[in-house]
Image 1 (cartoon, rainbow, N blue to C red):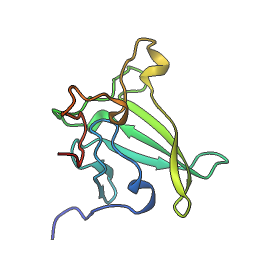
Image 2 (image 1 turned 90 degrees about the vertical axis):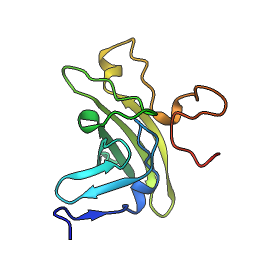
Image 3 (image 1 turned 180 degrees about the horizontal axis):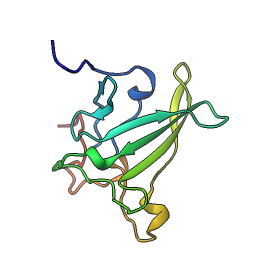
Image 4 (image 1 turned 45 degrees about the horizontal axis):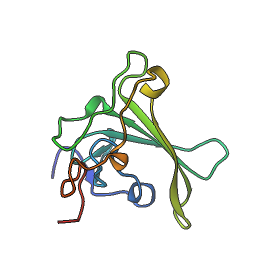
Length: 134
């Protein structure tokens, strides 16, 4: 048995959340440590929004490893490398993304960072995020 107890996936929210750095939907829960992307180690924390059904996902790039197909969350002095998004809905009705932003957008007007799901492939047969297409 390992020193740290792990879990393969969460049900519900982590079935719809993908990593904004690398685009992966594989998450690992390290008990008492948090939930991390399996491919790039970006940390994800969920919290409840005020007055809405759904959740707010906060992504912390402090723990992110260098990945060839990823683009790290931009770092700022005040907030660090943090991005967040809001998903509305419930596990029974399904979740849909309501908004997403990097904190650097609030600090730098010239921030051009995009989450993995908004990035364009470098060429027609190449994706900047994991995909099942071959």
